[in-house]
Image 1 (cartoon, rainbow, N blue to C red):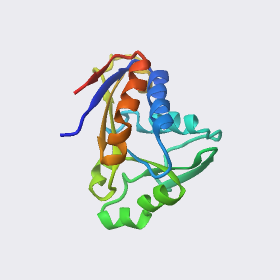
Image 2 (cartoon, rainbow, N blue to C red):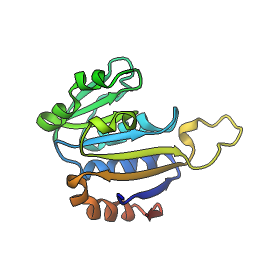
Image 3 (cartoon, rainbow, N blue to C red):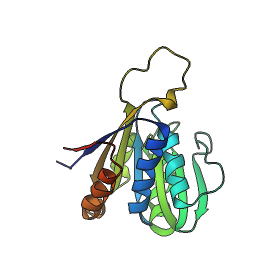
Image 4 (cartoon, helix red, strand yellow):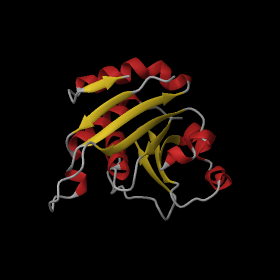
Length: 176
């Protein structure tokens, strides 16, 4: 069974801080799989991740383009969204593994649906930490539970470093 860390990020800024911490531990060849329901904060997480890598242009959801690529000082940041894909061969056609291996870091929204074909990756599952109150506050302003699970040797090698840096955020991590 893979180790898991669970964090409650009380704000959008805290979600971005978690994304930034993971980005700091990432390297060319990595695939980060984002999971969670609609509105869970996957795109917001990808925005924080990309900013930490040095993306200065707006980072938008690639729902209709499937993959957006941004140049960063550390290489390319590929932001993918497989929500609209219906078959695994469509994911293979995107060549996400090759994008990671040869050109950069890939973050895949809705990636948990296709993680079996992605190889080694880090899964980041986002969800609301509690039911939002009935108010006019945007959903992104609510606390998120972020659960992080490594898959494969490359993340296992960095797991202690990543968890130590997440602990340093002082958001109250819980290792399982």
